Image (cartoon, rainbow, N blue to C red; front, side, top):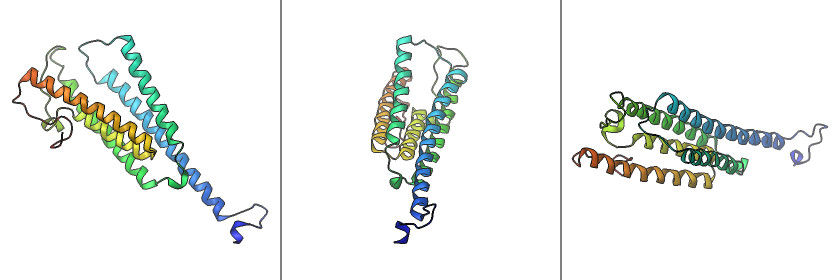
Length: 201
């Protein structure tokens, strides 16, 4: 009971120290959320300027829509993350999220390099991607992004952020399915691979 009413002039209490520590952990989570979002943006810009070889063009309105959607998504993710109570914050869960995020971005980048090398012979010449997880699935770069989404959800530890990541993952699954249809129309149906999740979808 003495800890609840400290008699020292500095009002020292173990509970006060505990509160500071939990606030520190909560602040660290927001730093990690910011770091993950910034890293993802940096990765996208790096791929746009140094990895991808584009065969077509995109309208300014489409580019603006994609960019603004990404910006809104980032702000909403950070905003919801601020509402997670410090006492509900799980450090092991956050570490797992960071590991998943880094791994997913690595998977994404590696397979984007494979795709970019397919265009070395000409911008309009299409080949079947080979190497890495392309042996099993059509869109391993989407799988990497989905793993990164899972990591962000674990870092944030907010239900709405998790639902946002699920919606983004479903969108990528739809794109992966359409990509599979395109490859089959282009190269024939005898090339069998899964869309994005090996042996599942």
